Image 1 (cartoon, rainbow, N blue to C red):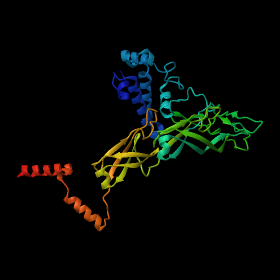
Image 2 (cartoon, rainbow, N blue to C red):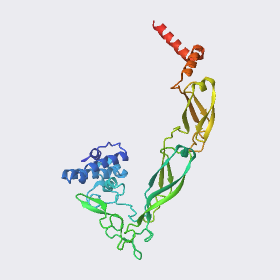
Image 3 (cartoon, rainbow, N blue to C red):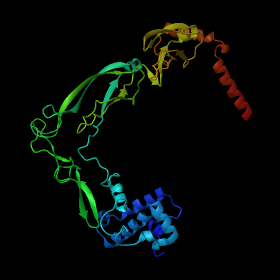
Image 4 (cartoon, helix red, strand yellow):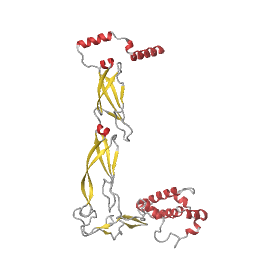
Length: 375
């Protein structure tokens, strides 16, 4: 073989079609005239890459090349050989255009005047924890475009119409020669729209759309949390040339609550209680998302104990069940005592039995064992 096409592209003979395509596109980007400034050596290199890829991307040509080398009947130069003249269908030049212009390559476009989907919009909704727990109706007001009522969205004044651009024949793009290549650019006459408006609508000035404010009342379901995103079909920006509207996405942000902390579908709160309440036992009133509830504290409850109120949390967004409320009791030490109160505490302490403090006894026993073991 006078040329090793595999070596030119830097691939092995066992490389897959995808590996060959990736290697070629990488080289095509690297040696493109826009990046090399029209360097002649780079231009010759690019010709070699194109020639090699034109063969290796085609199963039949690749098989012939592997069998006969460059002398095979399919690799002749001149007329019919695929090397002379303009760009033929399936040539490697189309793959370069695919790389730079998102797979268009100048082929298969339906034209700039084809219906296009409108852009999506996003709206941020702020909610309280209670609203998120039970759901809420929210009023939204946001700016968006509407098709102009005077021209029906065409941009042309009444009695006139849009005309197909003669420069690009409605494609919105034109090919421009640049050195070894011809590249695709937006049409300078129609500015990529594919159409020319001779007599523009006075209200929208030829844009076909006008600014407007949209108001909606939306039901936010129970169980949403910060980061939840809801979608409303067809409430986004209008499409072009009769295309459908985009969608509106509602992004939820739940504000922190002064009483409750959220953990998934559960909520937690901390309740201060007195020394007497945990020693003697008591029934206390605690806040919940539903209102107030009664909680029984058994005698001897330790500070930090957590009680569970089932079904008083937040609704599951999928509708399974409500979460629970976790109540943590925290014993509050009196900060100010009168002389009589202090005397009663002293009397209480003199009457104390170590059995009344099992946690303290176990801790002291561990210290004794530790000291005795280290002695």
